[in-house]
Image 1 (cartoon, rainbow, N blue to C red):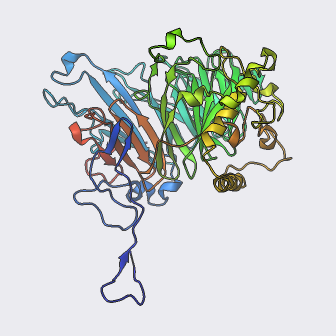
Image 2 (image 1 turned 135 degrees about the horizontal axis):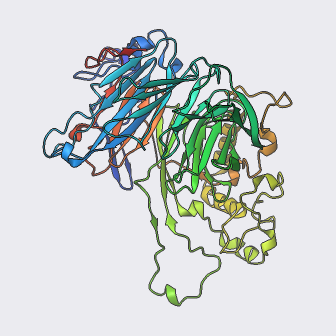
Length: 598
């Protein structure tokens, strides 16, 4: 498309409309990450295509003929790695991978392309799917491989659908297939997320847009009638039911969590705790075996869409419709930081387990002879790296450092802190017992600042001082602009929330009542992180973010998968040598098999 400037002098002809350039590399403290594949990518719309064959996108296949990418279920990517005996793969890595990718009504499967001889590290080729399934009358919305049982002779996969069913497939044993909730007697709403229980062969969880979470046994039937339930336990915003039946049948358990859709859930690294995020804007963390609520947090506004755990299980990060990423401490039961970098909803968050490490504090030469300073914390220099991908097509990286996790009070408050007794310390982990405002930290100078002694984990009081330190460089104009931004965002309701005073169902929290408490601190009451990098990398909303040892994988609703090579790393997994992969998916892919119509 071109825009002609009227009255322009001769020689100033049509000026092409330049779309916002997509980034192909970015730099962090450890080096440069670069996009693998073609240097120039196809643009959305009728723009010129890059030289050479360009991968087709979601907008070109029949799955998207009637609906645009925005109307299709979110694109998801699942991956499993198979540990094979070295004898089965001479000269190559003793590992194979499988990838599942949904697009519209289709599922694509990719796998290893052979060892390729000594020195070759080729393991996946996303240009030629090894299998494809096309579904009629429903669309796949989510999927998950069973990493615990994956082997050369069995690769179990769960697939959730928009009509409420859950299917079990085995990519090796083609004739093995089971369908759960086939008649939609258990739940009629779409499946929002499915996940195998950690290190189990048969048990899995499926969440629905109804706000219900079901525990299934892959070896048990579902029954020919609608299940009846007995109440097992209930708490603030949740109830747990057991299926009432004389013989074992699915579902084994039913959880009613919050209000609105249960959008996503994640198990802690040790498999004991389950973090759930819902459309009511709440993060709820349960002890899975005892079915007890361990902690909760409320979004600034709107629903929460994604959740992940830190590799050590100490922190939970969420993203959602408030355009923020929120870091919640599992041990302290409080929000420790928020991140502001996205301009729209945050669709995916993930920790990078390969960047950031716990290091012992370094001591200077004469420090051993100095008396200990009670105001200086001797905490490990822990740094966490996590990423987020959003509706705004931007990819952000965040660093969570010890000055945010263990903030120190400014010197002006030192005398105040030393005069405080233990009785004034707010108890972390009990947010519901805090009052609306008196338990919150007050601005410096009011004489109400409270903080724990150095051997007690810091609570909310110190977080206030850390926020003042982090944001003191902002002038009045910036503060006013930021206040207006969040005030305007708060007036936008895209989550279908009912107005205050309306009828409320289970566990609904009034944002006006919890704002300013430990459940939902105000913006200025916790540190506000700035992204390490924030780059536009797609034309459609980003829906996938995956950190691997040698690369970062992202995918967008357009159906494009991108690999970002880490600094100094030769990509061997999810790629072809150093070329990596940069694939587009549609049924017009020339290398695609005919597929199975289901």
